[in-house]
Image (tube, rainbow, N blue to C red):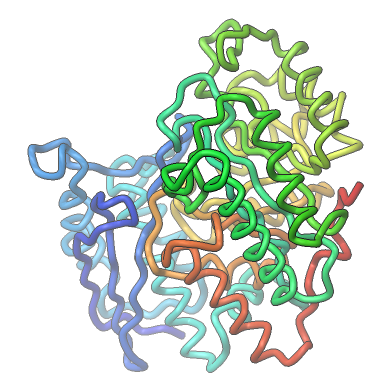
Amino acid sequence: MVKITALKAMQILDSRGNPTVSCALSTPKGIFVSMVPSGASTGTHEALELRDNAKEYAGKGVLKAVSNVNSIIAKSVVGKDFFSQRELDDFLLKLDGTENKSKLGANAILGLSMSFARALASENNIELYESLGNSAGKKSFSLPVPQLNVLNGGKHAGKENDIQEHMLFPIKFSSFAEAIRAGAETYHVLKGMLKKKFGAQATLLGDEGGFVPPMDSVEQRLELMLSAIKEAGYEGKIKIGLDCASSEFFDGKKYSIGSKPFSAAELSDFYASLVDSYEIVSIEDGMAEDDWNGWAELTKKLGKKIQIVGDDNLVTNTGRIKTALEKKACNSLLLKVNQIGTVSESIWASRLAEKNGWSIVVSHRSGETEDAFIADLAVGLASGQSKFGAPARSERVAKYNRLLAIEGHASGKIPFSGKSFPFSK
């Protein structure tokens, strides 16, 4: 049982210098603080992130969400006892009463949900990942394969009609520590190559720590990544993944990469050619969020060879996951807690995906904080994969350092998921 004695939210800054919500929950055991992430390329079906739309912070302030926590939510929960994560989250969902959390704001609700998860773990004298695993009905845990975003294009790099993220997948290693070391070493080799080829400006970092070189061709970027992997000594052990963020280059009728137009079928063929040439094991958001026919086409073409990850089309929402299952549109879930707004709903989405044989990727957002909650979530859900950005910028590295700490403290008792990666080619 967790007895809530006080609740206080405040406006803080995320990694892009934009406001977000921090929430401090007090119980007889202590004070438990969480910080809410925020996305840039967001799906239209995500739970509502409440912003002020006022002069301050160019309209991006979150004082309305903060006020909702300190008034409506605090008055409703302070002094009450809650026995489980689900009980607390169900209470918040009922308090909001809207389908997309538009009354209170998903950013207001999530801060308390995350802080409560920490309080529940403390109440039971266990680690956060263990408590999250208990809430999900898990009996064992695992360390995730990290997806390292090392080259940026698209919206994250200020470019139009472009594939957004190019990621390293250090798969064939015996521990998370070895995998993150290999990824970090390859990242620095890649940095050296970019500096030599384009000058120091090419090593400037995007929102998630990836480099933003003057390279307009996805093929050029992938070639450079393969070269860096080889030079670092990890050929065959590190694979590649793409987050296409294709909703950003879809006009409702056709897709455009650079100046070249594609139908959904032609885009699937383009992805297939990349998969055949560049050690690609995962494609995320390969089709636009509501192009279900395109998603089904892509999954039919490549779903037995690689991971087809749904993000903007699924938004960690069980209803949309069920639609994807019916249409056979993707085989993997990108799980973002702020897309849906509570810890429990994130767990439900994970369980539904897992039940149907999908892989699961616990993901950050482009606007992050130093809060490492999602590292514990990845371990607790035994998701098998995490997507936290490059091994750079403290808001990303905080998550990797937490995973290293979990692995170290567990003394080999929590396995690394590289051997069970579903598509190792």
